[in-house]
Length: 345
Ligand code: ATP
Image 1: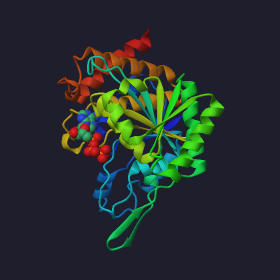
Image 2: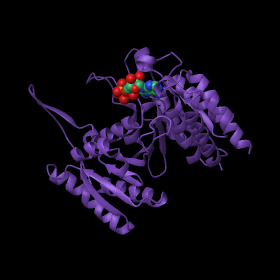
Image 3: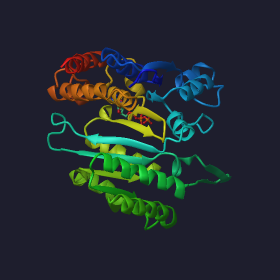
Image 4: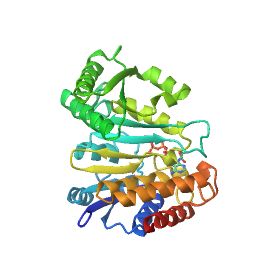
């Protein structure tokens, strides 16, 4: 069980502190036994500290993260200035070898009555164009390297097959642009074909451009499958898929390694609605519930998922982005009430 399990939590920037506090309130109300270690991180604290640090993650936070069994990252703002530090998420994925980003895509009847989606987006999260290898060759020429390794593709392909098997999925859709990126995507697909053969799972290859069209025109065709791709392609695919579900405020994700994981909302720090107590807490609450399950509190994860679905489908106490007028705190309270009732049963 969870006795002794520790999770480091970064509240983050923008709406981060509001939605992370919601998530912590829900876990506490559900009597989670996970020890929470609060840490600083993100661009706001970096600005407050005089923009001196080379990272958005202070050393003390990195140490705390290393000492915990998992971590939760609230949304953080990444500053585009090339001299500013790298994104918190990208840094943590590489530091802890969290090579599989998982983003479940599902719809709610009340929000999108015309769509019924249930599939998962899996993204290789340490390589590709996000490997962070960029160079200014001359004043007028800059390049970025799209790094694809056999070892990186293999471990990601194997993790994808494991997810598919564990969740009873019939097919994995590998998204590439192999007709153009013949060498890099050729290597990536090769590993998927081999992993699929070994696992007995069908692999279908779809090119990224066609994939975007299919997701808009007929996304239901992907129900019951796992979509898998390299870092940049899947960042975009999963964002589009999230858009189809109605609000980014609903999308949660995890970043899985072999023995560590980071949980987060899939949306950003939404600075324009910061501090207004109106952000949708769903993504953060569900990511936190998933973390509880990962650390051994599966009953709490199930209760929170079921409670959140009930609150969203009921529609009376939901935030503005999904058709309501409730505040972040009110929607959180509604989830807590339902989750506690479920845990009492
Ligand atoms: P990033 O680059 O960090 O992903 P972004 O500005 O591209 O940030 P978001 O911060 O996710 O993207 O914001 C996209 C839109 O979704 C904005 O209009 C924002 O207000 C809205 N949004 C994001 N999160 C929520 C939320 N939890 N509840 C309601 N609206 C949200």
